[in-house]
Image (spheres, rainbow, N blue to C red):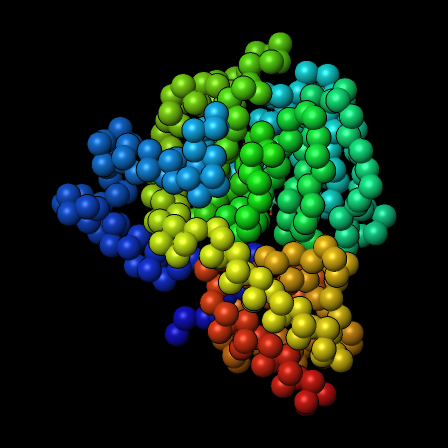
Length: 354
Ligand code: PMP
């Protein structure tokens, strides 16, 4: 029986995507070959990666606006490094909203001066800093749109006069934003885009080519663009499954349609957390993520019972990140609202029992 999968990533994908993806392992496009055994230079795969790159820009509303979409290797963590390699000449401004921002800062420090323009570290990253400014002396500004571990999300991005770089690993394609305000967006695929194994980079070409250092080919966005995201063998299967998932999103009506559903799921769960006397939310209310809801049982003693009840109800993946504990329900695009309703029912049952 299919479980209610609240895993933070890799995570649930639509069942239609699982079906089509598994079929392609046996026979891709009625070719008599598996997708796992064809050349990445074959016509069939080149059309997959081309469609995926185009669809990304279409869904983000960035077609014909000077952007390129790339499917690269190494996860979002490699982008912590690549961003600085390609864009950092002297100093850059970073907003520190959690573990992933901190890791991005650590890598960027290898290339130049990094100024944390604001941080919520002293608040255990339970909120998004506001009222900070970023002047024009920086090469770029970097932020993390959604903090997967702490369950906070930037609702309003600062307006800056320098390139804005954003790690959107855990909320890409989940809500409408004016994506033109961003000059570089990156995201590991394994949340709303597809399976683990490929990383999306969407970059405005005009910000590239400005640093004086030599960049190794694999990390050089300009080379990756020139080679149409095929400098070396791409993660063929991960790109293909991402394409299926992007097609699914498009068929639903794109980001606008899914955002509505995501808000509904989040609103249901957060109101259950707030109205249940046994639970308390972790993140500051105004900064709550619509993707990852973090919460705690007020009494730790109830955890074993709640865990058992969740298991009984086929609920998977709601343990909080090992660094903060508690609970985290990730409600990515493919999670049906019925799964959220089951989780709420279990929380309410616990309240009645306790
Ligand atoms: N940034 C964010 C916001 C994340 O949630 C994650 C992973 N969960 C990462 C970066 C790191 O991604 P990867 O494992 O693909 O390197």
